[in-house]
Length: 141
Image 1: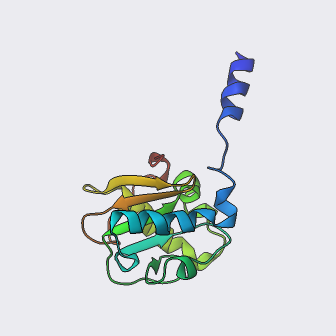
Image 2: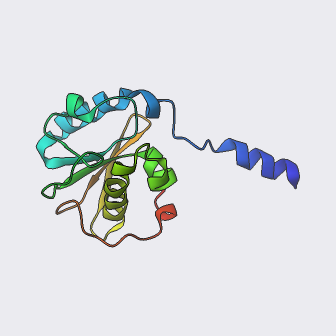
């Protein structure tokens, strides 16, 4: 009934957590990459938050700022996985988020691990960019 629908609606927050806005998980991503032996130079990132990936992950490709050669690993803020490119705060970053969302859905892309509450690491097995973009609502990892 109505009570059950209300409980369901409010039991799932529209955001993954408060780490989305402040950048605490960028440090956790750096630790995760180090633990797994992954160089930041092999990583592209689509980050939503109040920090700069270039400061926490020097050498990583920031997809909201630039395009570049394909990277094997991709880190995506769960904010973008939940809400899609509409969550991008400035127009220039939308294309990078669309590329990231397409890449995590393509065959061969593998979810590896979550850093904190807000960042997901994927192994793309190749490089970032170029896959057709399916429905953004289908990624809920």
